[in-house]
Length: 362
Image 1 (cartoon, rainbow, N blue to C red):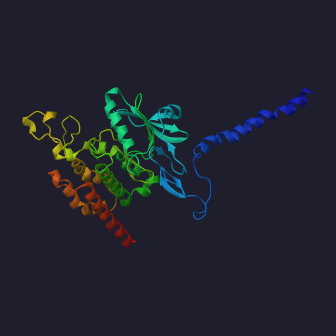
Image 2: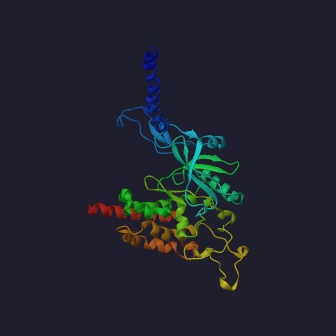
Image 3: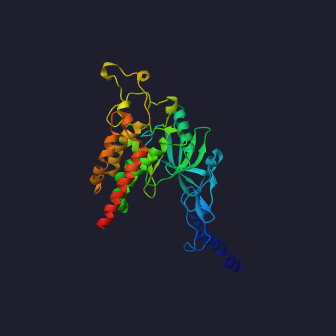
């Protein structure tokens, strides 16, 4: 009898184990699809269109999420930005991104997980940087709704000031050359892709100089590596601005200009008006340093474009087409430099010339 009971009940644990192995492993995959569309409609291969991040489906069309909400690619609805409680409960830190204190000493930045989605979790590094962290968070929040700014997922203004943003797997633009050396990404190492990144850079500056938060200046840009580190490369190889901790406002109508920090700046990368005007005969004094405006961003454009273009085939051809506008950017008198909008228009004309030329070659 005992042998018969053992025969009948022994398979039960095996059944449960089989169920666990077959189905529990799928939970991680399914949680990434919780908000995605599975329904079918006519006219689009029988499926609804897949909307990009921060968009959702409205009557079969992709529309931007309302302010204060976010979505990831493929979602059909938007969710409210995560608050302090949501961040504490659902955001799990995996590992630190980058070298602590390298290029960004203001924040501690981590790759994290939210419900199966890769996100970036940031918190203020110390109380010493509290004002910078707070400013950066307010800029990221206030400039949402633009395709040019890093995606906001959650924000918490209490405690150590926490920010959750979208994760961009290709990282920052200062690593572009190494990124495009990877064999699987060689198809992107083209003039078309690289020049598009240049155009994105100018588009972002144009947006910041005409932003809903006023005329904003990218102050934390005193060398080429630091400048490019503030921009992230999207999955389809465009740029978004990420680091907004130093984004002061110019108020021309009120005569309020800005100064980028309180230390003396050196080198050719910064604009002439950012250099100490009295030479070595007088010691640097921040109180005597004249302020300036957003045209310091214009001065840097030729250097950034040269770096983004790299040594790609026909890159020098584009450099020659841009020579005139780049010379204008390097005028010592900031009043003689073009606006970001004028530069963008010029870049778009050059892009059309290049694309038309490629079509003729084909």
